[in-house]
Length: 310
Image (cartoon, rainbow, N blue to C red):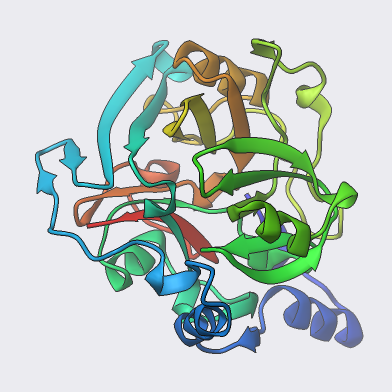
């Protein structure tokens, strides 16, 4: 859904150079994320950051639409509603965790920074993931709190975030009311910085049909019928992921934010959070793309994923 600036024609040389620098040119801040996470773990023996988070385990059992291991089990399903031009097709993945740190994050090209991209499938394969979804496209912006696999990468609170704790708690929080150090000390394992949150007090949250996550130059609106990705909390250590396809007449029109919220509510979620959508919305399982981004089965590069290892 992000990156609309690339479709604009900028006539002034200075503006063109600025746009290329802002939206296209890679700005690498950390060139080897795996080494950075390992260093963070080594410098703090009390933490389980990075690659040491989950003890090695035997490979899980895989079927056509499910996976079970010592740390996690998940089931992937397809759903369709409506008909004709109003058809909506979406995919769900229910994840039960015995170890909350089995849900990990990975960055494109094993690097952290702006405009660094790779497809969800490529990142998943790089990390031997059985399951993955696109993340929050942190690399499109320079704000937000970015904690991944227990390690802080950015501390610039700006919006409503989502925090995954090591104990399995998942909650929406105000990034501007805290900082990354306090969150890590509290036990936060991963954060997402996009939004908005979709549910409140057991109902679709009021006002989400007018929220815009980013209003800087070049962004598409997140309103209207769009492809979507969302994370929902069903219970302790029980999550549901939803990827809605869209912009493909007769296959899937996409949904509004209230429509996405209703899907999450119908799936039993008590907390739900919207993350990057549009061409970024992707779900991967057991070596293959599950959904059809924009109805074409062609992935767009994004900056990060959430995944479960094989």
